[in-house]
Length: 219
Image (cartoon, rainbow, N blue to C red; front, side, top):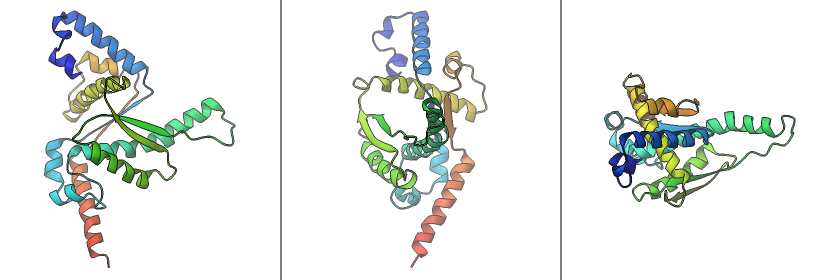
């Protein structure tokens, strides 16, 4: 998507009509070949104002890294995914295979994230901690980082993430979706988009401070 919007080659030679037709086709491919998409966003200005520096440095339990909003979104994604996995995915897969089956094998999930040096190490540590907290049945199998050239579906995820951010931004600003490409992506209603409001971030900060104080006061 960044190459497309920068009009890198070959897009710099394309007409406006060709670019829009191409983008519409890509959105339909990503939309129709995706069971569902989960997106999480944190307004960075509200994040920095609401969350104290000592909480950013040590998280709630002193282990999770909240030094950057990315880490918070990362953890929010996995927490929400586990809800979707147990409440929606398992139910649908069980019904498709056999609604009367006594022993239903719960699928494990492997994750492939776009490779990036800035967050990769912290994300790997956070993934192990998240497994301890929200995954008692070991459903989260592994976390891999790779390139968009090696893992082509990451390019579809990049497109969905780009428009999911635009949609969430418009929602937070109370604006209608005026972009036809946003409406095209949401046409199947399989986007699960979440964001923390300013009030929720302050509530998170209060709970984190209370949890930290409780650990400090513990004998």
